[in-house]
Image (cartoon, rainbow, N blue to C red; front, side, top):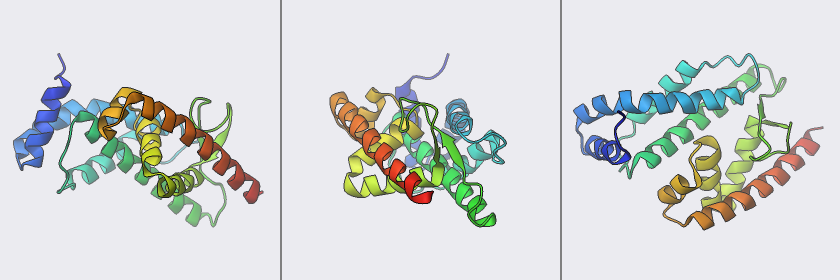
Length: 193
């Protein structure tokens, strides 16, 4: 039987308060979910991606345990931070790969029709990250909604809980953000050709 979200939240609070034993109990519990997130990210990557699921999880784990001043709110908040870290790792990996190839062979990320791009489209991960950064500068909440929904895989309800807003607000922000990102990425694709 897996621990309830409230038990996970309590372990996160205990860890935030400096209880190293709580972290030791927490990691086996959250590892499966971190693995699911990492596998989901890598499924969206191009075939033959050099970063493996285990390496992505371990890099994210190392960055997570280095989070010293985080006051964990709950389980959803923890996985949102983990998703943000995984996104940064993948973008950094894509940028270093592009730099190594001097701009050749951009890293492409296939996106489902319900996400950002139209069906069957692929989006450059770096272009998506840059567009998301521009969106966050204009509307930080919409940027967070995309990060939590797309990169973290949180439900509308979990996203609302993390952000402290209504599910209706999350749905509205999600739809507006997807349209905005679709337009921005399309402009980027046109400018690159």
